[in-house]
Structures are given as structure tokens and as C-alpha cells.
Length: 334
Image (cartoon, rainbow, N blue to C red; front, side, top):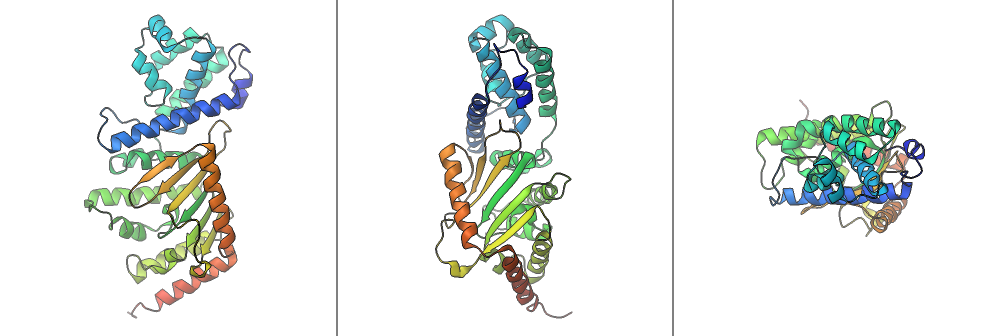
């Protein structure tokens, strides 16, 4: 929900920006919690992957209900909507049907502007997110991350051992995915690699993602998929360094111990102030979405330390080019 809409609501029902952020954070935590349980096979039911619009709609509906002084039980009694359904809608775990949404808005006595905003959010929430075509091959947490990444203003990313997915070539991505344990079947591998290729539009679209990457030197030294594949990948990185919205830095081996040794992570920031930042954390055992002021601040401080320890963008490009030439020299002539 945009701040402009909030400020035009009736004073008796107008929510405040900080409440929007708290509610959005609560909803995302619940949706992430649900995704974790689905991943473990302990929750059944139709899959609803969280998107930015669905979370905003959920935040709006919860705010409107609370501003009207109604409990979920009150709403259920007066609209006939099941309490469990209301909970799932307000936690962004389910998309309401249009008639359900209309019944809720009627009860909350919203003005025309708020009604239009809510109905537009529902229409947008019904549109497939970026992960939709590949959801059968992706974990719920990763699918959710892809959808949020597509809506983000900026991303600050640290990678320990592989090139960031947004900047991978298809051959490199396939080689990385092929190392998954347990082994994946060919169709799933293909889908996961294609998903990474589709994500690349985030840095090339008209209003592109502002991407700042710090990579451990291991990411450019480890020959993934063979010398030819790695040379192609490093050529891709050198091309990406020319983009105004992309900053690449390499953390050299001689930097020694550093605070990113625990694993890779990505900090996402969003255009709308209602949307809290989040962190996507990657390790061998778990991929997770983390939020909360203290955690965001901790990862932000870590990233600042890593970029300070890394080579400058210019020196990083020179090191990537050097690594590229060294690997290319190992390729036998035709």
C-alpha cells in the first residue's frame, strides 16, 4: 500500500507508516515460517508463494480491520468468512477471492480510493511472480526470494564460492547445479538453470536493480564446468562491470580472515517504505530469509566491512581479467 493512499484515508481509519512496516514484517515472518514447514513436508495444501503485492494487500486488510475495532471473530460473524481463512489472508498465506475481499471492504467501510487500491493489489497479487514458471523445481524459500528480488530497488550481495546467480552463464549455472546432493533429475536441473537466466533481466530492465557484489577470490579461481565454461563466465563478469547499476569487487585471498567466512548472503532494499529490508542467507545446509532490525543491521555492517577489505572495482576487474587469461591459457588449441 502506497503512503499516498494512507494519507488520503479517513482519519479514523488511516494507519501509520511504522505500523505498516511492523505488520508487513509479521506477515512475511509467518509466510517464511510456512514455507519452511512446507519444505520439511509438515504442511499440506495448495502452494501460495509470497509476493510483494500479496504482502501489501495482507497488511492493508489487517490494518483496516484493527482500525475498525473488529476482531477476526467479529468479521467472521458479520461476513460468514471462516476465521482460519481470515488469518491466512492477513498473514499473506492465501489470496482472497474478489467477493471475499469486497465483503471485508464493505464491513470496514472504506472510501473509494482505498477500495480501488485493495482491488488493484488483488489483481496484481493474482499475476504470476517471476518464480511461477519454475516453482515445481524450486524450494518455497528460494521461490519467495526470487519474487522479492524482482521487486527490489537494490541488492548487496556477498558470495563465498560461486558467481552470483544473477550474473551466471547458463553453462556455469548448469555445472553448479549439477553438484547438488542428492542429485537432481535432468528436468529439474534445466528448470533451475533457466530460472537463473530469467532472473538476469533484473539488472538489464529499464528500471534495473542496483547490484553491489563482493565475491571471494575463490569465485573467479575455481574452474567450474571446465576451462571453456569458466572463461565464458569470467567474460560475462567483465561485461557486467561496464553497467552503471552493477558494482563488482573481489575480496582477495591475501585479505586474510574476514566476517563473511560463515557463508553467502544478500541484502534486499525496496522502493516502498512500507516494505522492510530482508536478508537471504545461503549455506550448505540451509537457505533462509531473515529480517528484523538487529539482523539487517548486522548483515549491513558485515557487508560494509567486506567491501572495505575488497579490491576496488577497477582492480577487481583487472584481477578477473588476469584469472580469465590464465584459465584460457590451459585450453588446448583446436
